[in-house]
Image (cartoon, rainbow, N blue to C red):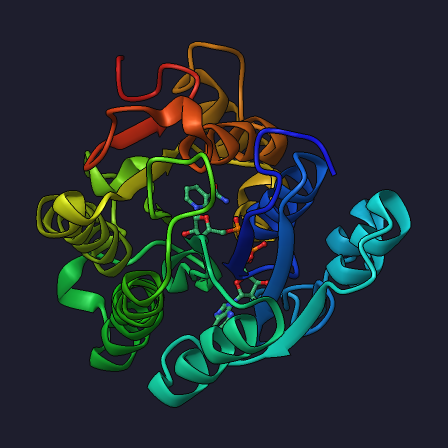
Length: 285
Ligand code: NAD
């Protein structure tokens, strides 16, 4: 297989839908062998809190499992799906062990699974209205989940030799958000969790740079995924969000996935510990 990521073994969390799915497909297109991890095998539609009904958002973008799509498009028959919760240490440990057992190594870890509890509520809530349960759930998935992914991926990377002709040992890409860099209205748990991802990324870059492990964070602006389904369904909110992205409205997951490929490739060169906005100039405004 040719491509910028040829011979590399990648594990991607949150692989069934939205950005994670796009990262899997982009990695596979560049020659990486991709292992997909998610709570669910296929994209799921979100229940609209106001109507109590599930929107058909994912039916519009295609609901087949990511692994099937990788096999169909790139003939990668050994790709596999792990049903796991990123908050459970043993599950992540087992998923990394499965990659090592099947392919002898893990080169790229994309910690992408995440939630926004705030976006599931009928109206955004300030910190004084945020429940302890929402806070804990957000921190568990968005922050602890990334920590666990990094922890077990790094342990594996440290054990293995570098790929022949490559001067680096591993590439970690953590999905943060523009909300890890700047605040947004009434999303306290989400903003705090993404800020934690940005700082953890820098810490890992410092500690494992001497071992030639890159660690960078992606900070996407608002994307057209299930996470922002409520915004997309509300013309007023959508107009406001579109205006906040000078480069022309909400972003496409494919554009962020291209940045993930760059951060997982040799082109990343001397870059580590960076929180990269991929945001249509949202944070520049
Ligand atoms: P999405 O809801 O389409 O996808 C998230 C995926 O993560 C889903 O497949 C879900 O099943 C999985 N997931 C959730 N909890 C999990 C858990 N505990 N264990 C394993 N898998 C779990 O959302 P998305 O927009 O693709 O979001 C992907 C990442 O991008 C998230 O970290 C999100 O915070 C981040 N992000 C999204 C946007 C946006 O506007 N959509 C902007 C910036 C950052």
